[in-house]
Image (tube, rainbow, N blue to C red; front, side):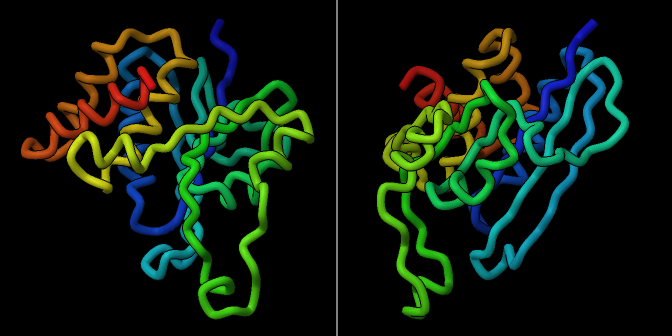
Length: 191
């Protein structure tokens, strides 16, 4: 009997969170999981918040994750990690890109980006697994590969071999980007 696992992927529009959720869903289905995925778009085209829920287990009835139920939050940006931290279950982990992307209120001067976002989370007892996914994505060949760097890091929390993930990349990514995405995945996994 496989217990249900709940993963939230949170980010800003245009960062590739939908490809990340597609890849994750592909891996989980190949491992015999029942998988439900739900995408909640904010103003994704305008750099707004994008949230994707991925739930898997023996039998999953709903794609929605309630507050306090997420095993993992994969965050493409620090403030998004803080914004969704209440969704995390006790003992869960936040995998976060240390990049700061200013939301519209900060850009327009109506608000200030909060300082010490990740330190605040840690002080509340949240397990924060942080990495500079942007630098690793650049090393892989494209700043757009942050999503695969973060999936590489997430893969460390699952009992599936590297080959399962790399095969899923081959099956979900456009052929001309496969090698770069594999490199980004491995850099995230091994960082």
